[in-house]
Image 1 (cartoon, rainbow, N blue to C red):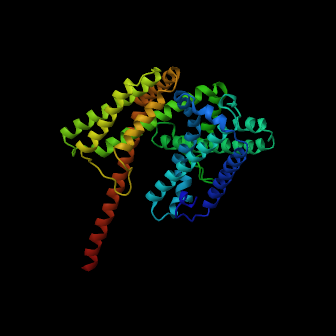
Image 2 (cartoon, rainbow, N blue to C red; image 1 turned 60 degrees about the vertical axis):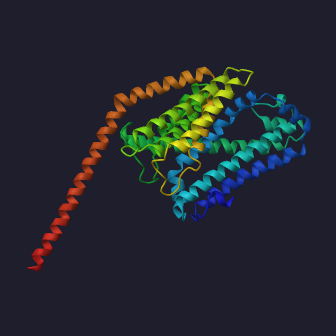
Image 3 (cartoon, rainbow, N blue to C red; image 1 turned 180 degrees about the horizontal axis):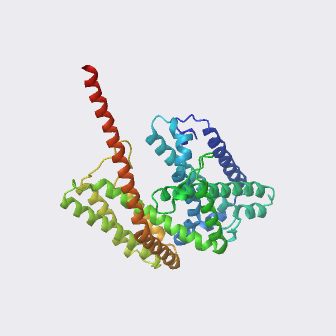
Length: 393
């Protein structure tokens, strides 16, 4: 697992290594213990389960994946100073670590899911405590304590990382004055945004106390998948369009292909959500997505290239990300989209009426300060030059 933290020698890395090794050891022990009590017939019955139900269960893993994403995004303060500051090649090291950690996580998910389906029929799996009940059914009551310890550690880690990450987000937002600047204050003793952390924890606890878990999980899934899709679209826009450099013809071709990618991906998700038994819709939407992506690849020149490291396989990888995220969005109920639309509308109104003006005033004040500092520096240089003339005389 050395490639997960490449070329880093910071002292705090040992703490990250110890926590990672503990998590990996728990997963390996559960996998090995479960492999002893397998029944192939249970997995055969699971294999004939409908693909639609399997994809719906994908949303159950979304919460754990979001915890990992928050760790990657929110770890800028901790990760940069404890790991990346000692890296020889920061962009390459972060990329290898991110991809490597996601591969290891995906493999662990798959192995544990297969083990669970081999231990007992999928229809008998307990959704609240699957492994604990499975071990009890095979007569290994003591093994459920290992599972409980691993679950407790995992939930605690995700909650702590989520709290730290969201507090940092709030701190950066408050620095632009979109929220009260009091939230952007960093404690001199601890070096952490205590105000933002306390407010975020209190607000999160209040919402969680009065809201059902399924509602929050579905709403979080919609927002996360939507953000992932928007990031993929933004990547394509950044690569293929530069103001003042991209011609109108190339811009129009790019917009047409991007619109076809979004439309075909949405059509596929809607057709799947309608539970159609035939494959006619997929035979139409899938070729449109493929030809649109190929057209963007071969008919539209890229306007910007990454300087150090960039996402490979553009536009294929971002286009696939758009299609997959929209497809998963089609597996979520309508009420979650209504809640997401309401929250998005409220935040947009807040941004237009307050946040936009606040950020503009802050940016304008910052620009004035920079200009004043620059003028002061230029005045000092002029004074130094004139003083040299007097000294010569």
